[in-house]
Image (cartoon, helix red, strand yellow):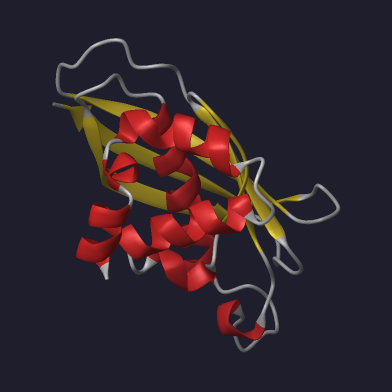
Length: 164
C-alpha cells in the first residue's frame, strides 16, 4: 500500500509539500482525517491511532486522537504507547513542515512525561523553529498532549535529525 500511495500522492513524499497539501485538504470535509490516514499509510504504525490533523502551518501542528477501545489500556484510560505515538506524529509533522526543500528528518530520540490519566479525545500541539539550513543537525522539539478540558496529560520530548 505504501508504494501505491507514494505513486498516487507523490506530493506527500516530500516534506516541503506537507503544508501545501494541507492547504488543499483543510477545505475538504474530513480533510484532517484524510491527511492523518495518508501519514498512517506512509508510516503504518502511525495509522494505528487514526490521527486527525486539526491545523498545520510551517513549524506548527495540532493533531487529534479520538478515544476508542483500541487505544485504551486495562485501566480504562488511553494507553501510554498510544500517547507516545501521538507525540511522535505531532513532533514529526511540525518538524517536517519546517524543513526547506530537499531536506528530510528522522527521529533519533523520543521520551514522554505522563502527567495524568488520559481519557477522551487527546490533542497534541507542537511548534518548532523553521529550519533555514540543509546541513545535517539535530532539532529538539516537544509536544503537549491535552484532554478535552485543556488539561495537560502528557508531554513528548523528541530529537529529530534533519538534513539532506
